[in-house]
Length: 622
Ligand code: GLC
Image (cartoon, rainbow, N blue to C red):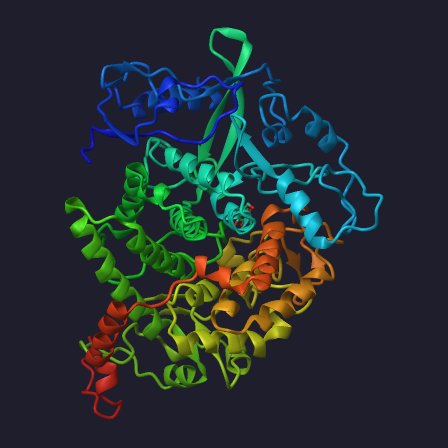
């Protein structure tokens, strides 16, 4: 697409009658190429930023996007914002939970009065049930439904946390893309498809908005980390308000971190939607196809990097703070691989996309080879690293990344079981991050980035290290925690990421769902069953915390939100999948024969396989 053009995406979501919508909503055109005059707003926004409030700034952005001045095949566009009844403009995070057409007022007062759910005793409207205690699952469904966010009367996502007693909301009142994934899957598995479809289409609209930070715009195709529904007064009419979607691409996020994972998760959810509903019309839409391609283009763009892994900054995924995961963290690689596989399945072949598909296929092979070969760690590999020669200058070096054996941390030697292994957290020149990162490892199983043997070995490792990785609450986000000087230097003395807390070795119940998909895929559901059973002992009593602290996950996290939606949804997805394991197929990918062939060609061409250590030539030391 030419730089001067922009893409207008038109959602097909059903809309409440009380919302006034532009005429083109009724008569949607999948994709429109527009050439707006005055597309460049950056300078204006930048120079005027001190005068422009956040809300008006975003209104400006949306007005720009749907400007009535943009002539569309001779029609005047009015606005895509819905104009609703008068609301209090002062934002209360609860207001975003409610349909804006007034139907939600009853629910709103219920929420205001909402008793804290005490282990399975809430009914769907938030009242304590008289007919005996509710099951944990029923309570979870009630809470998940209460977390739904509406836009123009349609459900479009779930709020990150719905803790009525929290004093500082921060951005937990937003719909996070990554947090919505388990919510979306829970709804899909329950047969409630609209919210997922709306989420996919509305977030797609946000994708092409311009976003800037201090006059700099990140690449086109980036999906926001989160968004919020804002109710603002309608220009020139005090009696009316309108709702606008306000995305955050990291320009307001703590630490200004780039949400690299958002677009990857979006593709994965899109594919799951098609698989689960059988409705391929969403993924086949021209605007959705364009959205997929924009994400791919951004990820596949050439850079300076020598590796096929995706190079990212620290905090660009679930761990969205500085934790020493910049470079090529496993979580991003697993999601990247998964998104490439899903996209390949969904892209409709057309002349213009042949190069992209070729680049995608090449990257898939190179990426899986790189991760399987160089990220794999088990006792044998540690021993190999322990005996590495260094400073090998040659094309067929064994120690390609010049890893100094002294890097092997002392904890690892005792920690690695005889049976089992896992994929490294990160690999860079002269640096291996030996920490175990759960999401990356679990998603490598789900997506078949790991080989079949490696996948089983990862689960063997989880079983062997249950006391450390699960202990009292599944599942540690990473192991072990960084302490002392290492913590000070790598996290920048982050008081939230102290040892065995939050991202630094805390336990996150949401990871239950990825553990469940992985263990079902490998025919070992008993692993997930055991973890779910353990979670059920505390999670509802503890009010669904975001994370747990301490080595054995004994405490509710120091700063953990309660009623954290993805803790609730993660538990529900695990339960639903264990009850219906066949449904895990909506999320898993099997390695196809093309990939398998290409991969075995690479393996047989790999010098490491064809020569032994003894045969190595004298290294040429520079
Ligand atoms: C925290 C988590 C992040 C999550 C967000 C909202 O910042 O680190 O992964 O998306 O909270 O729940």
